[in-house]
Image 1 (cartoon, helix red, strand yellow):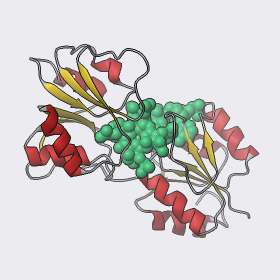
Image 2: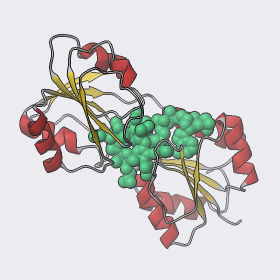
Image 3: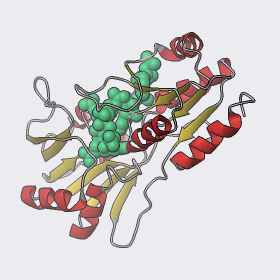
Length: 251
Ligand code: 3Y8
Ligand code: NAP
């Protein structure tokens, strides 16, 4: 059977997987939602944009004769992950998630864990502070109930139109980020508290390490629950899975 991978991307781990399958000469397509203006190029063919729900993804899998799906999306990309589980079950295709462990609280951390974005908004009640809101663009409007703060925002693309927060400073930058840079950024802006998703991995961890070094509190948003699926913790594990599941489907 001719192997043809679909990599659901959008993370540093997905980029590493794309490089490895390209190196191994394994045919693959790298898929992004098309959220940002200039996504990074990958060493395998790319596709941008949603599939059109589970049905659209099934059609794509059949039309493109995909043999294996690797979900290497971000842990907060829960809808894509749910759709991948459903579509691979419908199409009887093998699926594996390339996931990274959640960050664990460590010595010196001052975390306040909240279950979701609404919990982070609720945790920001009270008097004016300087808040580093590094959760991207898609959820900014949810923080509008706390206009009293000064927000330091970090976005991948320059904002289009007015932002939903009256007092904010925007940094346009794409990660992965470095701890020293994030520490300098927090000191420059007098950040009092950091809001972060528990993204895991290294690309977004800079602000967590910087907050620890500066003794700053972090409002840490727990991950959404995902459906049960086979998981790999590294690229080598995915390549081994491909090698062994290349013959019999669905293992
Ligand atoms: C389009 C693909 C690589 C992969 C880079 C990782 C690391 C840097 C850190 C902060 C947190 C945030 C955000 C973040 C990080 C990596 C990784 C990661 C967080 C790109 C990318 C796409 C996106 C989409 C974007 C979201 C936003 C989230 C910014 C490419 C660069 C905040 C997540 O403007 C928007 O609509 C942005 C949307 C989804 C979350 C949000 O709610 O806004 N990522 N990020 C993907 C697609 O179209 O399918 O451009 O090449 C990928 C990466 N972003 O090259 O090594 O692996 O996590 N991405 C968060 O953690 O909260 C930044 O600023 O500290
Ligand atoms: P999401 O809420 O789980 O997905 C919403 C819809 O976007 C999906 O149903 C699908 O549309 C489309 N989609 C998502 N990821 C896709 C992909 N890789 N390829 C094709 N379509 C995709 O996703 P999200 O949280 O917006 O994340 C979007 C992208 O940004 C993903 O690539 C993710 O890995 C990356 N990212 C997200 C975060 C984050 O904080 N959420 C952080 C870093 C990177 P259809 O239903 O039409 O198929």
